[in-house]
Image 1 (tube, rainbow, N blue to C red):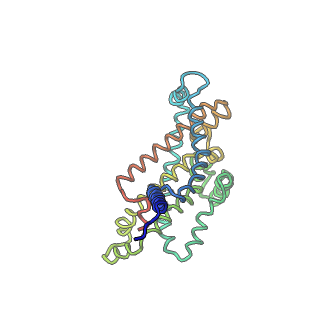
Image 2 (image 1 turned 180 degrees about the horizontal axis):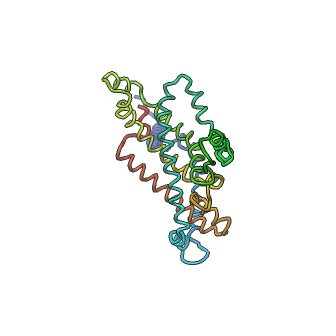
Image 3 (image 1 turned 120 degrees about the horizontal axis):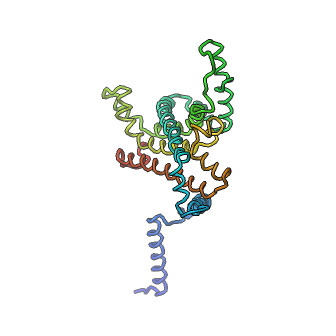
Length: 307
């Protein structure tokens, strides 16, 4: 009989133990691939977590009074806390309308041959930027803009409509700049549905409306909830449009304007930080409510429509 050296057995056992450890760590997501996420985590910590923590600490260090003085001032002053309602009156309708427009257009675009060309045209406003869109709307919808001048010249109107420097000017800007983002997200969910499901429903006699309500909508509804949340957050952060096309001291005095004025007009950075924290809390509450409602309607994976 041949004998195996003891050092060989020990080496083999060490290799087996090392492989077993790596396998167990990989099963828990701790492997070489996971380490590639570390730079992203460092970037998030540097660009988000630290500024958030600094702002939160700054918000509870008011110029005078207790640690909660900034929050007490905000919720006791109608000129400040009304900005929450003003922002919601803009963000929620714009998000709902963008979603209502994006879904049927995405349903149509996915069936067309030149899908890439049409998608490029529809998302083109993203490249313009908020300021350029606002300038264009001022020239087009203003009292002396092309739209009003054409209607007055045609005799449809006796005097120009006031479509800028008010609620509707900001609404139009948010709609134009937010639609491409909403459309792209909706298109990704719509195109992820297996066409065989709709074909099967059609074979069983379901019309277009019934196929959409019974097959397509339940599948894309979880994705639409995510789309609503992301589009809402984008619209809620409105600032340039509210200044350029709205009434910063009136109906479109949104919460971001209140934070800006506290920081750069009153030079009260502590109050500005508190307003920013409240702004984030409102967004988080709306997103949590939508995602909570989503879990009641669908408990599968987020990418459930891709099956």
